[in-house]
Length: 201
Image (cartoon, rainbow, N blue to C red; front, side, top):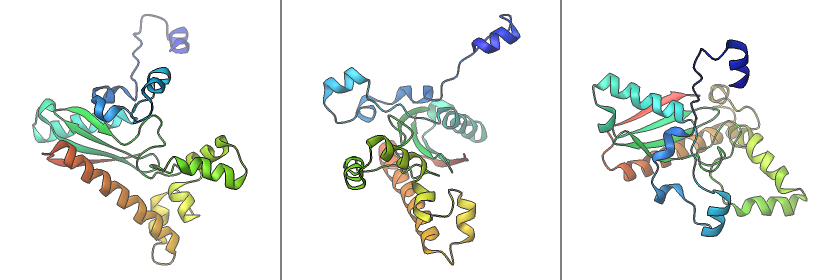
């Protein structure tokens, strides 16, 4: 913003839009993790959510196309591909989302693993003789579609090899299963969703 103001001057307004802003309405029961409360407070450990700009757009576009006021809209929004996330929207507000404290949580993605038993991090660090930071790098950069298939993080590439490559097929099966699992959970959370709305990423 500073660079823009230096280049364009102060007459043009600067507006900051935060990717996590749409998820500020998530209630406490979905926002907080079951870790010691003093650590939650000390380190601000909570579900931030990401892709908020995309999920908000999907809400507004759905409302526009259906003639439903946004505040009366109950839908599940899916931002899918290399970076993937799901959001439950009730009454036009985000009430839960798959990405959490970081974008690593949630759906299986292009290179990110998504939901994972936290003990796997320490287990891999010990067994492989590497640092936690190294394992974190694997989970962020070498997992999911790429890690499982060994071929690509791009679903279009994997679809071309489904018939001949069992790992490509498995990667897509895991991806689709995780999406269905989140949609089912969010249907239960919303109770009366009218649509599942998709976007690419």
